[in-house]
Each structure stands twice: as C-alpha cells, then as structure tokens.
Length: 88
Image 1 (cartoon, rainbow, N blue to C red):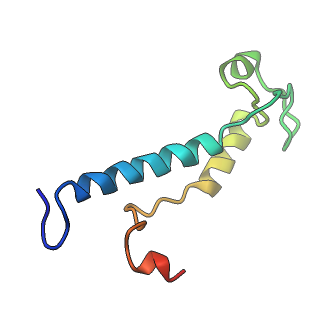
Image 2: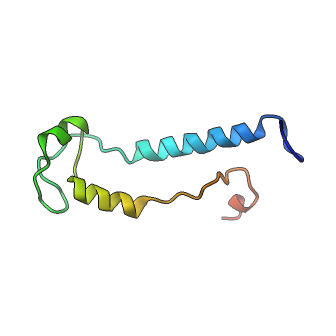
Image 3: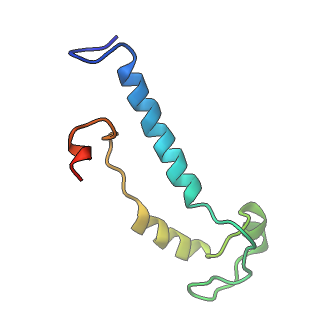
C-alpha cells in the first residue's frame, strides 16, 4: 500500500535499496588478499584463530574496533530518490 503520490511497492523498493547499499558498504570494507601475522597499525600479533576466521585480516581486534568506530556513518534512511540527494 502506497501513500500520497507514490506508487504501490515504492516503500518496499526504498527499504530494499537501503539494505542493498548497506551490504555493498560492508562488503567493500572486508579485507582481501593475504592476511598479516602482525597488525599493520600497532604491530601486535594477530591470533591464528582471527587469521583463519577473517581471510586477509590486517588489523588486530583493538585497532579494528577503533577503525570501525571512525567509519560508522549511517543516515537512517535512503536518500537515493529524494530531490535533495541530487543537489550534492
């Protein structure tokens, strides 16, 4: 059910687009290539279990946590179809 001037299914399309964007953003941040035995930021040893669980890991848990805090930006809604997003 759509409201106002939107067509049927428009709300679900926007929800789907928001989820797809979040998945793409998460996949783009995943490490790739050969992993390291020591953290590239602080030099601490990366445990073998972490290296096996995350292929291509380059940071220890502490540095990864700090990096994640810096990169967490979520607007809460998808602006793909809004006029404002076209003004940027």
